[in-house]
Picture 1 (cartoon, one colour):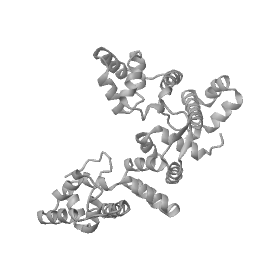
Picture 2 (picture 1 turned 30 degrees about the horizontal axis):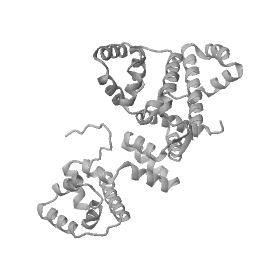
Picture 3 (picture 1 turned 120 degrees about the vertical axis):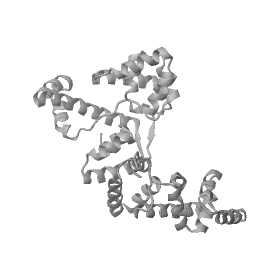
Picture 4 (picture 1 turned 45 degrees about the vertical axis):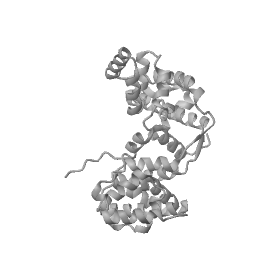
Length: 332
């Protein structure tokens, strides 16, 4: 393929999913993180054929790495020579230093659990157990809960006692399931929102890594860095803050901006803001909101973005805490 190594690495990171990708970021050098982040953010689409080729190459590298780990370079060469031929085996050995951890059954990661259940429920319990170990926990738990009781128990037992499975078997099961599942999938160009994907990854990494990436990216690609920032925290997320944080935010917010921003918000969101104001302030804003007419959507979005900027500033100064989807524990 004509794709660069960086583009292939970015495609693999996208295929791995947010959780795995954020974990991998912790083991990369700063310059690697920066290069990979830019590459992911600039991906708009990849053909199904290209993605399949990239993942196939990645799989072969993982298999080669396994042989090297088990018996060393000579052992790996001997097996790979028989399987792929001398030339291809040599190429795999040379590329092993770039090997990353693989993720099978990637084509199922965005599928609805109920849709997956219809494909899996008639499979053998061992096959179901194998596939569930590669799915997201929320997908797997939903499927297990919907299985018949006897099958459910057997699948759980098989997962719990599963040790290791041959990569060849995994690949064989994956091919069979993908063929069965392909009728409901688009086999043309795969839409990839690189900015959204990297934003989700950065939401999972630690704050230090997040700041480093965005600061360095701002120096080289300021527009791209700002677009990523906008995706990482939106106006509606403000109401997920605790009451003290919301009240701190409201003391900094311009009343006019808040009035305009709330024109594009649901009643539920507006009520949360009003609940954290004084009764006098809430009544005044509700009255002014009744007489506000002809507000453009662009004005609403601009006002909301100003308020999001205040949240970022308060977070940077340590005045409020923003979870951003992480599982941090607060000590009080």
